[in-house]
Amino acid sequence: MFVMDPEVTSDEFLIYFYGSAYIISGIFMLGWYFIYKLLKK
Image 1 (tube, rainbow, N blue to C red):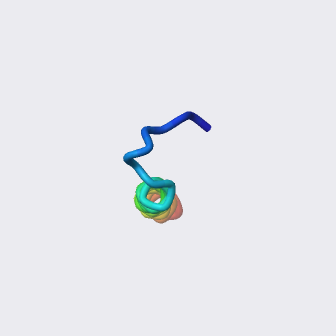
Image 2: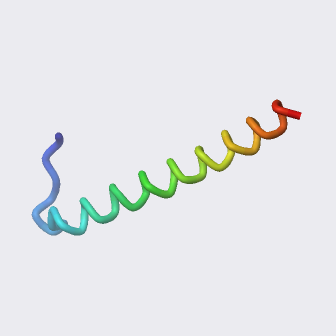
């Protein structure tokens, strides 16, 4: 991990980090799912 400014609390950072990671993984899985369906045709 890296040192953050004391202005940013760890809770806010964790919520932002996990939220963005969840959205990115969701978009990636959706894209992979559609590509898989196209290849299965």
